[in-house]
Length: 122
Image 1 (cartoon, rainbow, N blue to C red):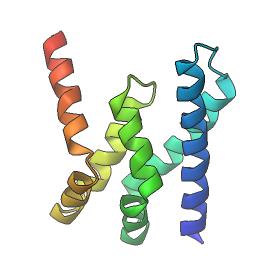
Image 2 (image 1 turned 30 degrees about the vertical axis):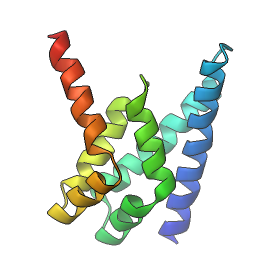
Image 3 (image 1 turned 45 degrees about the horizontal axis):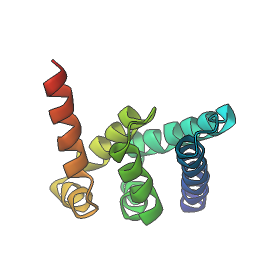
Image 4 (image 1 turned 45 degrees about the vertical axis):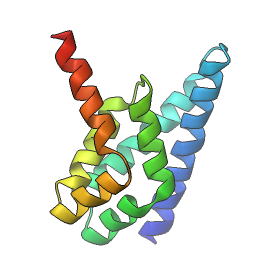
């Protein structure tokens, strides 16, 4: 049951985020509904990453669509970069195995890049 809900949230978030980047790249105004939908879905996924049991974390950590969304949010300047960082951190904090999963999903390098950008601004 939870896996279906998580899958639905991730799909909704992915579509909203994809729409945001497409409209932004085309120079058209960003539709606020997409921001609200993506933000809400991201918040729920973030809560699952922080408080969810191991089986839900495993589902999040192996969902290729979610990992792709997180990479996209980290790769471009995004309203949701902070939330993406928190989700990755909460999943990785569970165990060394999850750190390796996040590394294999190519999510650690963008985090390091963000840190270097933030450090250079100080």
